[in-house]
Length: 91
Image 1 (cartoon, rainbow, N blue to C red):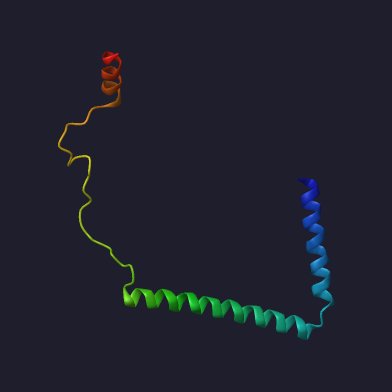
Image 2 (cartoon, rainbow, N blue to C red):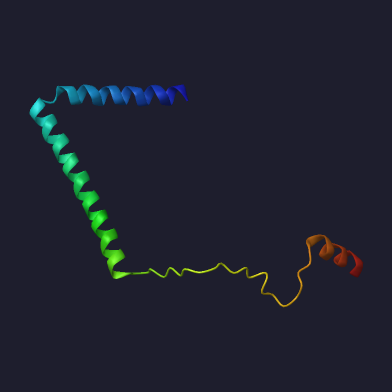
C-alpha cells in the first residue's frame, strides 16, 4: 500500500512540475478550455433532462395508496415454523 501511495504521489508531483513549466498563457487556455467543456456537458445534461420531462417519455408515475399483495391472497399465510413442522410430519 505504501508503494502504491509513493507511486501516486510521484506521478502527481511530476504532473505538477509539468504544469508549472507551461507558460501562463497556455495554462490559462487549458483552464478555459476545460471549463468550457464542463459547461457544455452540464448544459447538455440539463437540456436532456428538461426535454424528457416535457415529452413525458417513460413517465408513468401513479399517485395513490400502496397495496400489499400479500394481504390480497386467498389462502391464509403460514409462518415458516408451521411449514417446517408440517414437512417433518409428512416424513
